[in-house]
Length: 78
Image 1 (cartoon, rainbow, N blue to C red):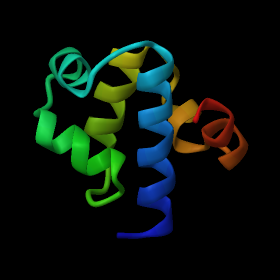
Image 2: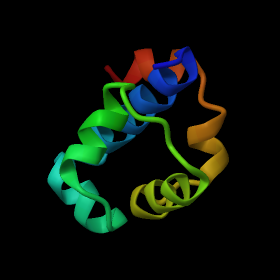
Image 3: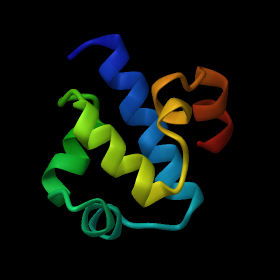
Image 4: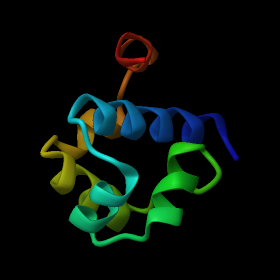
């Protein structure tokens, strides 16, 4: 688990919560499994380019918004 994985996971979780989605709803929309979403959000799994694209499509945000998120965004959403 890298600091990058933790930051990206926290960003995905914050964006999901801001949209009022459950992990299951995000997983379904992104064509991913709920356990994978949970592991990504916890920073235990890295996000591939393909998964990043799926998350960004499901959350309706540009990939760059997830990849280059700032800690202040994550803190503000908590």
